Amino acid sequence: MSDLLERLRGRGWRMTAQRRVVAEVLDGEHVHLTADEVHARAVAKLPEISRATVYNTLGELVSLGEVLEVATDKRAKRYDPNAHRPHHHLVCARCGEIKDVHPSGNPMADLPDSERFGFKVSDVEVTYRGICPNCAATA
Amino acid sequence: MSDLLERLRGRGWRMTAQRRVVAEVLDGEHVHLTADEVHARAVAKLPEISRATVYNTLGELVSLGEVLEVATDKRAKRYDPNAHRPHHHLVCARCGEIKDVHPSGNPMADLPDSERFGFKVSDVEVTYRGICPNCAATA
DNA sequence: ATATGGTTTTGGACTCGGTCTAATGGAGGT
DNA sequence: ACCTCCATTAGACCGAGTCCAAAACCATAT
Image (cartoon, rainbow over all chains, first blue to last red; front, side):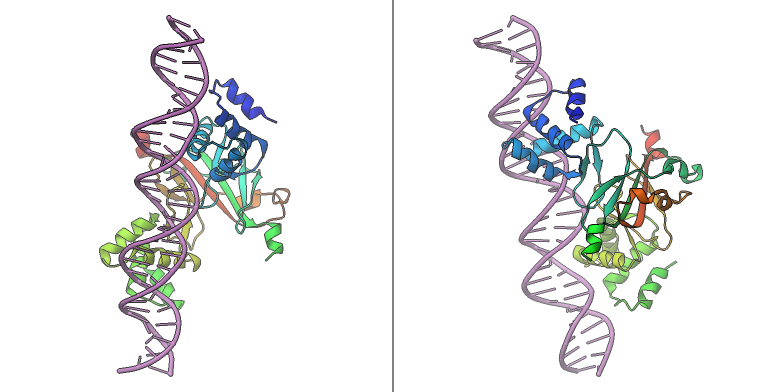
């Protein structure tokens, strides 16, 4: 399960206690954590780790392409370790819970040239919004 | 062109100088402004208007469904007066320019039941990212 | 084993977008 | 005109994130 660590080592990424802890936190749980949540869990394993380091490390993991930044709600960014297979998101409008989803069809192909305004389009992000069963029950 | 004002009046929305100015700013230009940009333009017409009022008014227009909140980049929210016809967005990853686009196909139909996790799905938001011609030239 | 030099980490100050509050002011009904 | 609410205001506050200079750290050459 811990192939994130493997991959990072394989890329010659300098490993330090702090970096390992951040990677472990992301790798261990397949969820969508905010930077502060990552920090909180990292602190549990390595009490001295600083907020700045968590931000730095997350930023690096993102630019290495090992982790995705997800901006589903307008509050904190979330970090998604599932970068190796493309997917989209389904977000609960009430509680903010996020599920990975794989819609059929290819939204990229749905944008005709006439609607591209000369842009070099490289990426699509699809976000579904709704109410999760849990919140629907507590309506 | 100024049917936003009409519609608001028709809904019995209490009209004040400030509210009118904000509505005019949004209605006048069919672009995607941040709250601060709206404030700047509002100030040009009514120098005493406060930031808080602009935020309040934008919030109200959004909950009235007359204006859309767009969270394309991770910085400031943008306000889109084109709420009456559904559309999606194409964003320049470099300069942040935003275009309205109308992809063919219906992304809503592309999410199979098996991928809905019991959610009551009500909305899809598709964001294309790329580089605009302008930024591509200045590469 | 030690010195060296580049990289990481740190914590605190700072920025930016946005919200809140308490006091003031203005809209509209009677 | 008056009264009651709602809207507006300025400024304090907040949360998320960035920046910085100093300190700690690591890898390597000696």
